[in-house]
Length: 289
Image 1: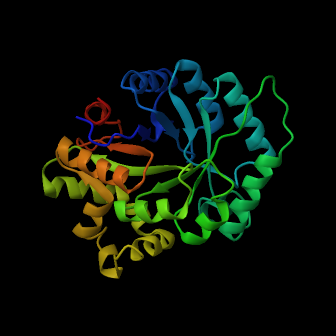
Image 2 (image 1 turned 180 degrees about the horizontal axis):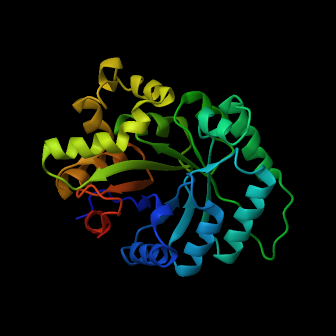
């Protein structure tokens, strides 16, 4: 049934899960042949330590930080953590990096720096870090990048680019700006719900935080949305463009659109149609089955 013909990844706020449940979740994803579990860095667990727990509990699943905040640790610490996890997991760890936002940087006590310069300098420092671990390992680096200036600055430095809450048109634009050998991981909220009113209600709740952020609005304006799409939690047009909802076939069609546009991995955020915080495994079974 999988029309996408591209690997399926999963991004989910795993901070709510007890350790044993988290390991079982990763094992379930591995049994479904999910390619990568992307571990966010929010206000809970430390993502490198969490990744170690998940890698130890699985055999084939890749685990990625999605996305590790460059203000949370210096580049040498990130390089050491990534190389250690790559060594211990036989190369199954991916270092996903991003600049987060000014508010979170200030909350951590840091001074916000121009994001393009900050991320570029950080990635170069990770690459140049002199870290010694047994065996031969390399840090696989993916970065969160939406805009043309960021893509231009980092595309020759990284193994992959990650986008978040964008449309297939945006995927096509990004693919044109990076090399064929660079991975393009597209994160897509998905919701197995056929009732338009309920689906859009749940989607607005999931998107509410992001709709208020200026840098996401700038990205969406470049795709043809305007200020009228950002009021009252987002217009139907915005919601339908950013969240794949409906039948399994409708969601798979959206995944296929991203694949046709150049995505190499579809990273699914499996929204729960019951409105709860648990991941919707039935959806993942449909997508990865």
